[in-house]
Length: 525
Ligand code: NAD
View 1 (tube, rainbow, N blue to C red):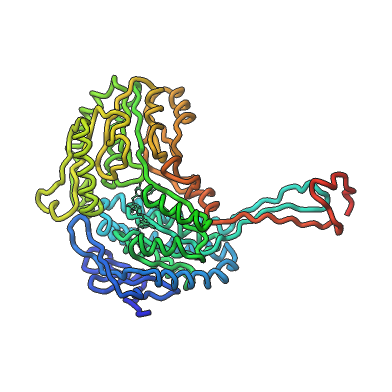
View 2 (tube, rainbow, N blue to C red; view 1 turned 90 degrees about the vertical axis):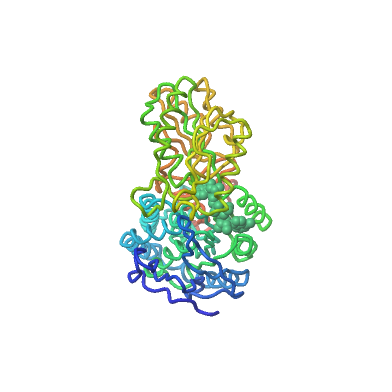
């Protein structure tokens, strides 16, 4: 294996203000994979680039991985698993505490790197890093919990108890929209539980994952415990799915790719956790505080340029307030400023790349042809410097039928759609009638409607009088239907994904005791 640029100390990097990108990453120097504690070039020698979506500039040249690189990374992870699983969990936690501290110290540099690589505005990039900090500290604390149970046995002089075991080598496949937070949602619970990891980051945002990994290295994660191979999903992702020594895949991404992952994993009886697409709705009832709802819609629909899995791409509005809401939304949307996320005056950054820009535009055009009324937006923004990047004008549709394309398909851009309804019952029915099931919200002043909504909404996350976004890491995150496969990330539920429950019986009676058969025994030892 050829070694690539030295990783550099995470405390020595530039901060993204100058030519360097921080974290030892410098333009013009190849960034490699991390395999067994070494930063190395691909076996096949292929490269790819990551680009700033606001400017079109190339940020870095990276090694493009192959199945052979995945083999090496899995071998390293498998070797490291033998000792890492035996490191006491509180000691693993101490390493994560150090990582959390380093993340806090480097939050600004990491956020600036993220804005350059992914495009989201700086304030939101800081939030993305903060989510990783929260997850790191939360899971570090789990090192002193990771509790099982001791429960009564039905037989005398016998104990029944449970403990969490690590699963083994975790294959983590991540998207570009939360390029630090989502990898942390997989890496931190996996490591604290004693697993080792091979992560494949999205090809649009590998540098963010490189930065996160360098922090974990500096915090003391031993060689081989955390490995990274970059490259296309069809090559590197597939190699992870097919590898016999990777018993668990944790995937976040589109429902299309997640379905492939599920099928391939099922053929090999792998454990697989899927976090996929969404078509989230905000319900605005006739008694809602419209000012509050307006702010929630703007933030949920257009934050991160609409590229959140929880983005509110539908607004189910009671017909009696549709006109007022539409007028105010239009006015506010037209004031939103597009631009480079590093500029403090920017409200909305670019979308991730030009291909996605064309995809969004194609869907908006199809929505218009479909007969849905376009209120504002609906074009690629090309004025001034915007033409160099991938910018889309914030877009509002109205009078959409609940089953229309724009009200059903995940557009994943700064586009939202008003769907009028006539009653609370209709609002709930429309909310639930999509192939996805991640996040929903309802704005209402009626406590009875709020409670009925909590009961009847069938998405994994429900907000009352708040937008569809703003997940916190101490509670489960995930969705129903085409959004997930029953697993949840974050909180205690996240640990369930990365551990096997082991049940242990200890019989100290000194004789054969037959469960379900020997029902009346002398309790004396
Ligand atoms: P994507 O599905 O294109 O890619 C996600 C990851 O999967 C990437 O690393 C990609 O290289 C890899 N991949 C693609 N095809 C693969 C294959 N055949 N085998 C193995 N790996 C493969 O998604 P994206 O464009 O990066 O992200 C956007 C999508 O992610 C949206 O649909 C969004 O809703 C979803 N998302 C969901 C959540 C959630 O928690 N539910 C969070 C963030 C994003």
